[in-house]
Image 1: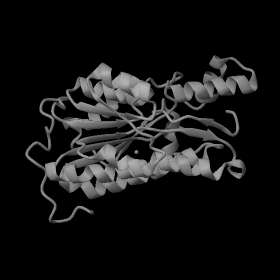
Image 2 (image 1 turned 90 degrees about the vertical axis):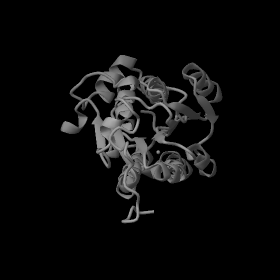
Image 3 (image 1 turned 45 degrees about the vertical axis):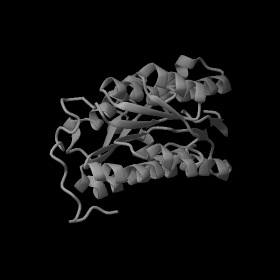
Image 4 (image 1 turned 180 degrees about the vertical axis):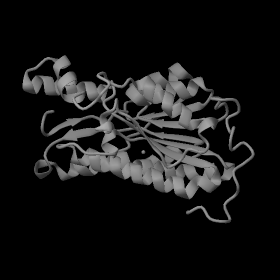
Length: 280
């Protein structure tokens, strides 16, 4: 991948003995399996890729989706398609992020960005920006959403992490750091919120067929003067057993399950969807 190249944003109180017991719908909070009618779901990075797929999938289950992205035209198109509400927001400004989480029953922290460079050449301001988008803004969104979730004794938080939230690769210090941080945040929330009927989990995909990844492939192919297909096969899929990119709809299906009633006992977990990358 091109060293030093920046890819655009693709738009993540301790429970105690006084915490209320989960409501009577703790095991079937959204009614029948997969039914999220009446739930307000906030999905960041919803203008394209994984976020758009998740927004569509949750809308199909009956949830009212707030689609968040900095790309105004794209997120408005997705919201119009699913009958949701667009929220144009740049999550590199953490002061604005909290507004996205207020009143949410479901939060899917998906917005992300990438920058590739060796540590000794990594721009500090870009490093900070990646952590803001992928750790601080998810924290602020979750923080704003939890009071409503606690009051309703129900909530679902899904953080779209990465295989790089579980391991590392060279040249991606900020991304790897951010995704590891998101994993820690998710687990902490899971421990604090369990007594209120709120779950928090991570999905850890490998390379997904998104505009962000497609741009990385194109840049690498141009830099090294090799065909696009060779980049996918020799670079992206070199460590996977399943020799294809993950599709956004696959991630969305897992996210929808984690948001539904069947997953009420699943919290603090990280779900690899990496084609066997982590099996090595």
